[in-house]
Amino acid sequence: MKRALITGVTGQDGYYLSKLLHDKGYEVYGLVRGQNNPKIEFLERELPFVTILTGDLLDISSILRALDVARPDEFYNLGAISFVAYSWENAMLTSDVTGKGVLNALEAVRLYAGDDIGKVRFYQASSSEMFGKVQHVPQSESTLLWPRSPYGVAKVFGHYMTINYRESYGMHASSGILFNHESPMRGPEFVTRKISMAVANIARGRQETITLGNLDAKRDWGFAGDYVDAMWRMLQQDEADDYVVSTNETHSVEEFLDVAFGHVGIDDWRPKVLQDPRFMRPAEVDLLIGDASKAHEKLGWKPTVSFPELVRMMVDADLARIDAESA
Ligand code: GDR
Image (tube, rainbow, N blue to C red; front, side, top):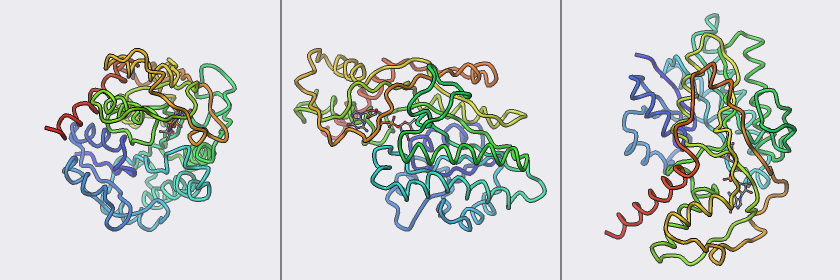
């Protein structure tokens, strides 16, 4: 039986990845931060097969302790402060966790593996946010990085550290440059879930309007359930490498609104959408569109959920949640 250790197991991707690994027969361990973390209850309820280990990406000794217990074949580093807008207000903490936390994880794995460096395969959750002010369309593994947020800068550090550990120590360390990926498990602060929840509330007469920031931003949005499969495939390769994971399509926030409202029968949604500078960013990433041909060719990976299917899946899940609450 294979064993996996996941950081960030309480997040959206941790949820889908733990399920995928469990279904494949893995023994799954999750590193969870802090005492009385409210997310532990969720984890125990939804993912009872995950063995919870307490630790923090800022504390290398806690990662080493977790490695000693989990003895993983595969280490998935999904833990990060992941909300881009928050990273301007908390640039130092974001740099420490999202950036230096990756180095702590890599170094802990290196120390744990000792002479047998291939013992643990490492996955780093890199991000399309690293492309920032895009220098090429569509973006591939070789596109120049120009991050536009403290979060993006921290992810670039983690990305290159992963490559550096691969090149310096021969570690089986791969980096997945994942474009935006969403699901009903997405946190409510991200624009897609913020919209799906609001549209469901509006459809059920619980809310009148939604207030957003920049509606022109374009993103390459895929389904998180598909993307965790790409992570796993990366670690099954003989050679570690970097891969873009995306749908190769881009859509604006406005198009997301159009499909979401359209799904509940509201075609004239503009009066329901307000804008507030509070939700605008000091520097915006205007256009993301990935080129995942390498993942298609080498990993045999393809996304299975289209953009309109994803939007409808999210709105339907929020409608079902509201209906269950009020039943
Ligand atoms: P992003 O996701 O920053 O791309 O990072 P987010 O959903 O937060 O923003 C997407 C775009 O929507 C615009 N926007 C708003 N965003 C939010 N959150 N709230 C709003 O009200 C709003 N109005 C407009 C934003 O300006 C932006 O252009 C996500 C995260 O999951 C990262 O951790 C991950 O690395 C990348 O995706 C890939």
